Length: 334
Image (tube, rainbow, N blue to C red; front, side, top):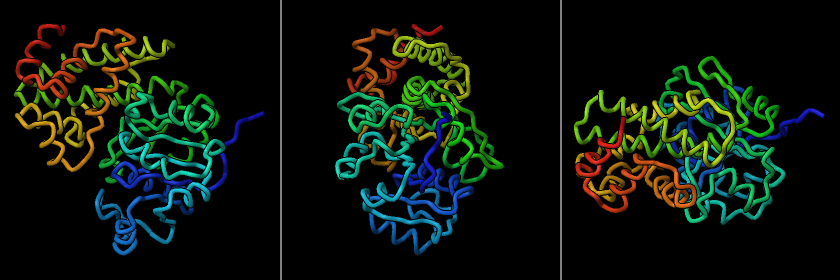
């Protein structure tokens, strides 16, 4: 029997820039959507202004087609497909308020991170803690920046799900004149790749802040994709092409683009900012900061050779001088 995606309402769970871009994508095909945001003042401003007051403010919405609520249980009850777009460090806090069962919903994670403490990728977290079967979990991955979706620049998305038919059905809901989609069953590899590319983007930013040039950045990125490949083949050894856009493309756009908050964060660290002062000045979450610690802890079990990740960890958490640490790293790259 063919797998079928649930027919009901789609909900956006989160209020940041990527959540706003996904809402724009979904409303191109859906008549209306539900949207969970935790702050009532943001919801009121959104309804009044016709755009998100804090993120991607240039994207206009017909607010009559959006059912907003700060009540997570209300939104979950009224929706069949839940697209989670909250930063990974805050996911548990949002879900603490959840009393409604989600094991029968189709859960899409557009979160590029790992749940701290448990050190679980998001799909595993929903599976183990909330009982959502893997065939009802999808991951949404790039290479894609929210800012370019807002500008309707041609972008490519990959939907990963162990049930390929459901992935294809959901992919069709996202297609438009400027969004092309593909599908994959490598849900684990895509999620770990999404975490690692943020770590490597911080490395690229640190090197930029230290005034290393394009020649070195090219070496750094080619070594980063090899390091990513080693890690993915260890934690989830299947046949995959790490040069596919969902892995390599996402790494490149996050490592090189000025829209990349992880690269910006790294650049500030390379210029001499402390972690705290960089975080305060950015006013946005650099997921790679948390991802670095999670991967470092996971790698205590896997023992993969990861000199770039180790260097980023030493700079961010051991407070080693970026200049000294990157100089040491340059001697290990080829």
